Each structure stands twice: as structure tokens, then as C-alpha cells.
Amino acid sequence: MTPAVNFVVDRSSAQMARLRAVSSMDDCFERAPDLAAGMSAHGDLCWCLQTYLILAEQGRLNVRCSNTLHRDAINIVHSAHLARIGGSADAFVVCARADFPGRRWAHHHLVQNRLQAGAGATYLPLWPQPRLRKRNPERRGVERVAYVGQTFNGNLALSESQWRRAFKGVGVDFVVPDPSAWNDVSELDVLIGVRSFDRRTYPGKPPSKLINAWLAEAPFVGGYDSAYAQVGTPGVDYIRVETLEDAVAAVDRLKRGPQDYRRFVANGVARGRDFTQERVSALWVEALSGEIAERYDRWLRREEFERARFHVLRGIGRVEVRSRAAARRIRYALGA
Image (cartoon, rainbow, N blue to C red):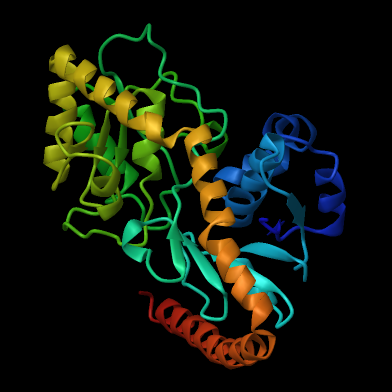
């Protein structure tokens, strides 16, 4: 029997009191819209709260949501949150890495890129964008290209102004929607997801932007991210580019070739069926009731060993966290 699963969020007691009245994703948007909106930007809400709400509504697993670790459950904790709280020798912890480092004292990891998977680490695609609004099927032509995401953290190659100038030359507007509108693709025609123009593969990044484009029924232009190639096929269900000029030319071809546009949309729709909320839910249930439950059972049966393991690896982990923080301060001081 699968043990209880406790999704741990980095929220105050007052916020938890509000969440206890929430029973589903839709309910969260109605009763706690600020927390619901945070699912697009905050790791603990995206990986933990969102997963809890979806799985709780389905009722296939015994799930909880709290702001503390539980001794009698599998605890799912976002990596950044786990680095702050440290964990406990009395709690079984699964670290949701997202864009952050693994925490060696965790008992298992959830990762968002297949290159990170292996012994002790399970790949799970991120949930589709909540309340995603598809491109309006009544739109004709290609007038507006968008990057949907944060631009200040290196996830978009070049600057917004460079992209705008480049697309202006082919009569297309380049826009970056406000985070509050990341779910709304209704008035967008092509989505961009290029982190750099140097063929870097970003082995820790997810394929979320591509998957959301498929589900929104909009063509996607991306870079050489390994995650894109893991789930899609360049030239079939998305367009891969190496330069800004390539990106502009690709969008211009879609603008001039409606048949190509429809082909990329149709192929994306077909691939997107593997990444719906229902499909991702099944993957979560499979992981939690399979290899993670088995690791939890071993943890229960090896109390002394697991306690010693935690204290040794937590000590090493503290050093790693401090070293990374010091390195960030040095880079900031040097203006890097």
C-alpha cells in the first residue's frame, strides 16, 4: 500500500489556513487567487501545491499539503525550500529539483530533464500551464510572436529590444506578456523559447515551453535545449534555430506558408496528448506508488543506517550550500 504523501510548501500558517479550505485547482483560483497565480513563478507552489491539488481531486493517492515535514509520510519538498529547512533524520524526503541543485541528503529526487534521471532520480514533466487558453482558431496569419517567461534570468537569448527590432523587419510584433497573462495564448501566433545561440543543451532545463506551445496549438521556435529534443522532433513538431536571423526567417516562413503553419500545429497537437494533466497525473501516481514507495519502505526498515546517512550527507550538504552562496556573492561583487 502506498504511504501518505505530504506536499510541503514554503508558506505561513495564515496562508496554510486559507489553503485548507481549497479542494481543487479551480477552487484555488477562486479562493486564493494570489497563491494560484504563484504556481507559474514559485517552485514550491508549482511542484508541490499544484501537484497536491490535482492528485487530491483525483483521489487515487492519500495526499496532504502542509508547511512542515511529516514523520509518517513521503515528503515532497522543492530543492530551494529543502536547502533552507535542512530536513530531519526522522522524515523521508523527496527533493523536487526544478532549476536547483540536488540535495544529497534527500532520499530521492524528482527531475525535469531526462539527462538528470537515474538511480535515485525520477524524471517527471512539469504540469501544463494552469488554465491555458489556446490560440484563437479565428486568427489568421502571423502577426505576433511571444516569449512567455522571465527574461531577467538568462532564459531568453539577447534582449527584448533586439528581438523586437529583428521581427519588425518582417512585419511581426515581438511581445513578452506579463506573468499574469502567461496562460493566455489566444492572441499570439508563434511562441519563442531560445535560451542562447551557441548550441548549449541545458541538461537541467525542462521542455515546458515547448509542451505548452503544443497544448496551446501554436508553432514553437526553440534552441538546442536537450529537453526539447527529448520530447519532440526538430522540423516536425517544432523549429530549431541557431541564430537570431534563423529565428526571424523561420517565423517569416510560417507567415508566408500557411500550410507549414498548420502542419507544425497539427504535429504539436498530436505530441501534446502525452503531456496533458491526465497523463502527467498518471506519471506522478506511477512514481509515487512505485520506486519512491519502495525507497520509503527501505528507509523504514533501515532506521540506524538511514539516520547515519542523513547526518553525514546533511553535513556535506551544508558545506555545499554555503560554498554556492559564497560563489554567488563573489560573482555579484565582480559584476559577472
